Image (cartoon, rainbow, N blue to C red; front, top):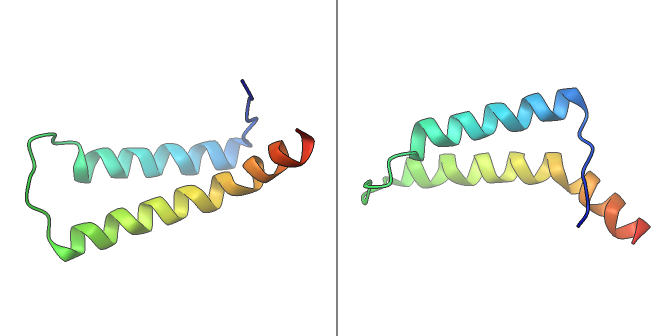
Length: 63
């Protein structure tokens, strides 16, 4: 198993994104989403990946 050591700033950003995701999509019974919902979900995912990708690339390079 690999460990990612996030900076405090990146950890805060990821925590904010997870909270935003849970606030918007936390209802497991929700079955109807608008196109805006899908766009918001895509944006959250894009931001999440942009924060994690440098850390993941570093792990791959050191493997």
